Amino acid sequence: MPASNVKQLCEVSRIKLKYAIDQLELFLNEYSLAKLVDEQQDEQTVSFYKGFLTDMRHLLVFSEASYEKLGVTLRRANFNNDFAERALYDVYHQCVNAFFYPKNECYSEDGRYAYTGQDAIRFRSKPVRPVRDIILDITKGFEELRDELAYYESDYLTQRRMQGQK
Image 1 (spheres, rainbow, N blue to C red):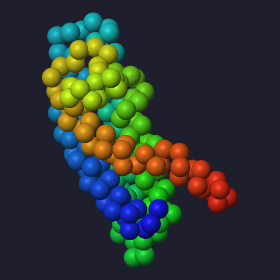
Image 2 (image 1 turned 135 degrees about the vertical axis):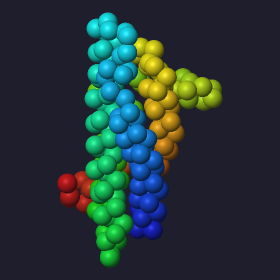
Image 3 (image 1 turned 30 degrees about the horizontal axis):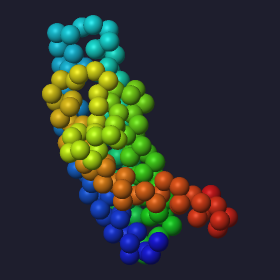
């Protein structure tokens, strides 16, 4: 991919990650397990919110690390296309995948709703409003990242293997 396209993709990806990071930090600083569970003390509800908060913390860490790596890429005096492509690969495989395939599976994407104008995210249990809001707020950015970085899902590694690199 031409260096100018890669650089622009790095800039756009960094902006989208920054928005997600800001929203996740606000949410995680505001809501604790006790606040989300409130009066519902049943084991299934507590387990749902524990898993959700764990997944959001992981997503935040992956997003912050990728954001910083993209920043390093863009601040270099000479733009290193290989380093930038590796950073974009990491954004796709760490951030985008962490969002759409959370380890605790508190929510998932249902592709049948993607083209109907309805929300494609389906929760395992009915969440409180702030949980639903944070996911729906950052979904669009991660959908756009997934679309823009689809090349890095498999083509990047194939290209590297053909060049004899890892």
